[in-house]
Length: 466
Image 1 (cartoon, one colour):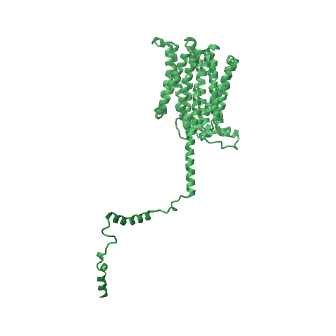
Image 2: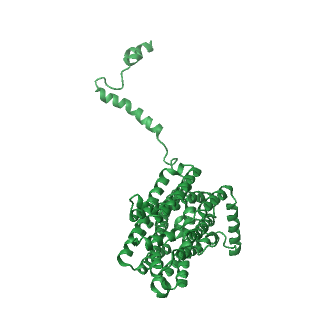
Image 3: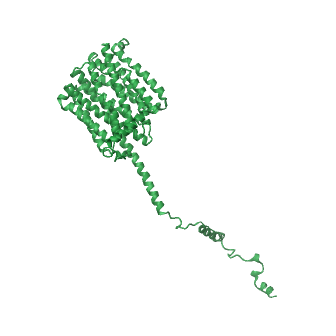
């Protein structure tokens, strides 16, 4: 009874389903809903919240990640700085190498007109002056084995440029140097000695940098710079000789240009290229040279290297070169002025520049055998154009000697230079690590020796034909 009385007197317990809500039914619905959802949001936020102490990065990991990031950024900056330094040093160096036609055009006119050398003697002098080029393997072995101040490329570039500055400056400043044949030959030999040392170091530097950074075909851009220098050198040389008739002044201009190259090489540091420094500090010079010579012989015995080298040397040696004789014939018999001779060289260098760009863009995928076979046939056929000029066959077709000399005479020389490019790209890729200078210099020496033999063959052929 008590329970029934209690239930009657307290109506809130009469029926559980009729228990009144905590909120007044008259409370606005939006306020009620907000109060109902707020605890859920708070609970959800509490469950998903993370302890800030558990999110802290390990200081050691943070430090190592920063070190790795800085090393990556430093490596990228080094690569960018290295390629810029390479373009400035070697790009300008190859341009100067192509510009060597500027003083050589003046020297050829000086020997032919002022010293009155006959064609065969002039060609012998030209070929004899190339003898320092034959010793390029020795320079390459020295560059690979002997480090100077921890570097083995830039010091040799500087030494070679300095020898050229002294040689061409002496031809201008010392009167006897340009008048007496023995002294003139000594200056020319020292000039080509310096040029050969510089070329060996540049070729090795480009090949080594390309292998380290996996960049194929840098030699194509070197050929472009060389051809651009040849275009400007021949053009300015012809104009300068036509206006002034002072070849000795051209020697001093080129010496000044070489002085700027020397300053550039001295200011550049080999560390900027990211190349390895000397690791054989305790090894003697003699043992280093012996080891490098042994590595060179092993590289040459490689089947691919030996076959390519044999073919290119034989293809040059069997074709007689008549450049000196044709030069004397054009100047003394046809009386062509220096501008015409220079323009013929300019056309050849422009064609070389164009063909080099086409090779870099399109012909790299062409079979090596097919490419060099076509170039060799074209080269042998174009040499017959010299016979056309000598026999004056061009006049029968109404082509003046000036037009023929400008448009046709430089084609054979262009093909002769271009045929070397595929072999340089090939050898740069086949060169073993640490043997880049030796192998590239051996290729250059073999090419120079075959050219000298071809020049002597052309001189004898000229004497035989009269």
